[in-house]
Image (cartoon, rainbow, N blue to C red):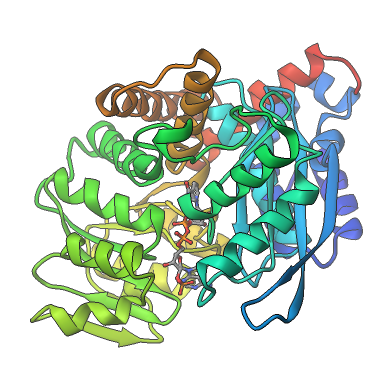
Length: 447
Ligand code: NDP
């Protein structure tokens, strides 16, 4: 519930203006709720219309993407790039290719990205983009032609110091490669205009691992500070089996935990002996198959169709699939099973009433803005390497990532403590992320 008159009135205007964008409104409400004490202490934010300016993207680009499939049929999709806020640096945020993409989803992701990028302490603005194109089941040729058509419009809006997209759901190294190839063909400009490239042509080592590893570094630090505990001998439930989920599972196992579950939109696998990551990588990364195939090659494991991994008892839950995938009933189940911490690898995977239940039952909640910022942080390191024409080794990037994640925990706890929300990571993330952007906006005048 919003109490500040200012936040309430801006939220009411946002709701009236975007009635069909529930995910965007959910993200705005959640930020506004946390920052009310900051608004009270800083009347200049209201005088300078900071909230009104924050929720209105700098620009929204929507375009047609026409491409030909392998049967010679012409397909038409829609493309988006929403450049939300560049007070702290060039617009930065991924591209999502998924059937569910629409303006509201891109706006919610772009809005969240502003605060996440701010929390890293780096020079990064916020943006997001994508398409309602579904790459699943498409041949490499079809994905290439789609990416080329998508970039044929996007290229005029992006640039290494302007707007630097990366991957997200449905966009990995293959798609980034095709997008970069077309950008270069159109502009002759070999620059760091996209991150997530392969290391041979301007990418950073440890970028594929960054979001999942970063999630575990942050979780480990939170466990250390708030519970004097660690990953050692813990059981972990993970949802998803994409980029974030796979490398979260890898790092959790490396830190001494046993990963029991992974999933996709069809169901989840449960492996009481600990998920065999070599097998998951072969199925998902090499063959682009379904997680159900795991049980064919792994004795003792089971596949549960159309159900979520949150039924399985665990100490640590890492939702790494999609928004609002962990709802109130899942939260109740996790509490019942003695889960100690939920840390978000995906963007906004925990529904607001589920967060409330976790809080009421003293389950630590680490929000996406903080917990999955490792991906964008290493994207910034990729930009730095590109600008300096240098390639750092894996250990250097990984060490820097770990430092950034630990710093983020410090920023969140400090901001929470300053506003009487001790140990509330979600409030702390919103406050710390907001304060830096709002101050930069004040400093840069009314634009
Ligand atoms: P991938 O495309 O690599 O994997 C997504 C995974 O989530 C797949 O297993 C997919 O299963 C599953 N999934 C997607 N939609 C649904 C759904 N509606 N219900 C159940 N499962 C679903 O994406 P990423 O791993 O890159 O991204 C996962 C999440 O992490 C997203 O929220 C993304 O925004 C966030 N994120 C990603 C970053 C990155 O660096 N890649 C950085 C920060 C956040 P299926 O194949 O069946 O669709």
